[in-house]
Image (cartoon, rainbow, N blue to C red):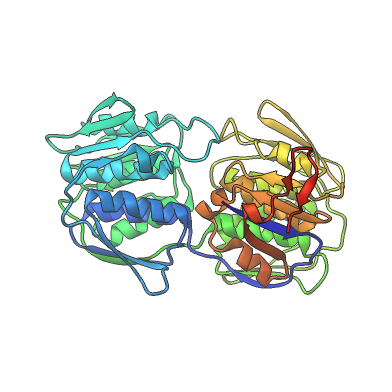
Length: 442
């Protein structure tokens, strides 16, 4: 397995470009199942999660071809010959369940393993299944698989979600595009990725209005058509770079984060301003000047968009360790998303947890140590911590990082960081039977 070796204490400065959004790309890819014509997607990040979903789609019979620079993807679902998304792939990434709605809508059947992914909470999919039942689907759970049928096709329905689940909203939108009649999705998720999906589907011939609000209306169509579409930039990657610049950009000339949609990170920018970090917006670029003043603590609650995103909670926690005083984070979205705290405390932070609330005592210097990523966003927060820790931090289980960040260490190195990717056996000390080191970490 790969590890990252992070040498702390190097200031960040310069420019960095944000890649396409993983959380937008995955539903866009699944939307290709809704038409027999070709779909060309651009600005697709070449990530583990994306490659896993390509395998899921390929197993269903979708043909695919990567562009020369591997950020464009041609998909064609004309000849679907299988309707089962297996556990072996779906268990690696819960977003694979996004094939359920499109398969059911176009072919009237689907068998999809119950999803897996990061261990940050149960994240039940009852919202999706209840919605599909309202549209006339027959659903059974058998041996860990969702067996869905709609022998007479899906019908438009008035659906009120028990909670604004993003994946559930996306799945139901796709299912409704080919359903007979009009579907209303109330208490819908408002995330920008849902707007991106709806925009592409409308370009394919769908009739969707209200995306980005809590009521989405979809008028079903008999078929959808070919499209070429560019995925939105990744707001979580942008937020990660913004926070890294605020942490490790205290000298130098500042950091400009390019190819962003600033409004997507407004909640983060507002909190940073309150804490004492000034940012400058120029079209699709966000500039973070060198931070030389003392940073003020914050009290934060994660919320669905447009609130502060749970996917930036871990990264924000590292930032708060450098703010003077006590900060708090209440995690209201997932019940098990503080697994990075013990790893951060190994680096010298002082963070305590009580139920879904963490308390961070800031203003403490960090000291390097071996740490281990527990999920995708936790891996990014540990990289950030390593940037400001004294000494060399070794981060293990970086396969989590590769699921959602496109060349993160290369981009940070372009800003002045010192991060090396190595094989674990090249950095792990070896001992004799008396626990004496016989080979030190390289």
